Length: 345
Ligand code: SF4
Image (cartoon, rainbow, N blue to C red; front, side, top):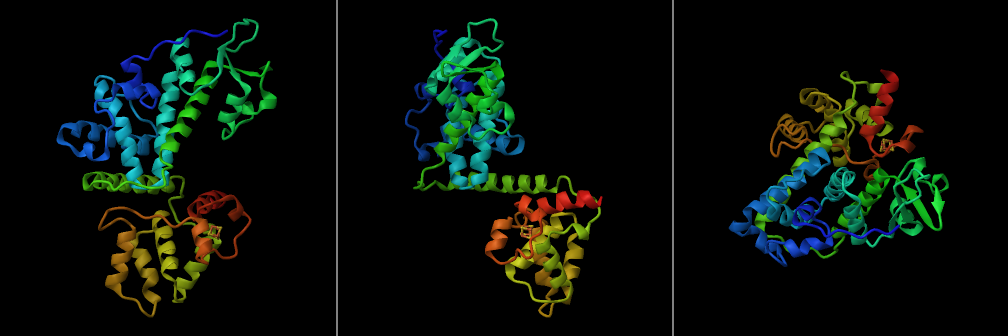
């Protein structure tokens, strides 16, 4: 059954600012990047920064529906800020956070709004009028496949779905989930532009702040799940090799030193102990070593704690040595340690 769609009100656009209809409500039509630094638009920029910070910290973007004008315009401004960070982690995280929030909101929307939403993305969505079948909606097979390609879980596999005349039956939550997947992809596309504009200094300043926050956040999540005491037997092969070389006073490349230091700091070794480890080096310089270790630990300078490079990077630089069977299932030395230390705990 096809249902008439409702019009989006301004409040809906504030809740879902990525909809096509949002352009009608922009406080400043055709907003240019330079405009964002105008003093009268400061509130929009502030809210945009908040959107991105919430995405990084909580993987959600709250809705401030009392001031619709600011809420609507802060979305494209947030897209500008995320683009300016140049970070693929932040881009993915922001798209995911907006999509997750939309999923929560969409679940409670009336039919007419859900259809209007589907129309925005040119979906062929229908209401199921057969009361014998316990599903609320039916979605065309092609729209279904397009939005389930990246979804894990057996329930999304077509063989496990009820189909009729080229349509797949969906519950309300499933419909909201697939719409949110469409939103995530749509927002991620916004960050695909190859040629970046020149961003004003104020925008770059905020982008840098956001980048620091994301590095801290990644660092914190990497810390989760590590044992309190250091378990040397759970070190991945690359780190074992670096650790043995350092203990024996053998020379380490720059990336080798960085990897070992950041790894040990992140699993909870105090900076003093890491500095002690490098004392056997023939070129040991206490002041320089202390500076480097404390910088990596985030105890000086930018206050950002660094994490070791990913396995792929370590492979490229020849730091990955004798990978074990577990190495095939991890992409980061810290992930290896987290898994392996559980076996030894
Ligand atoms: S695959 Fe990763 S964890 Fe394993 S040795 Fe190589 S770099 Fe280290």
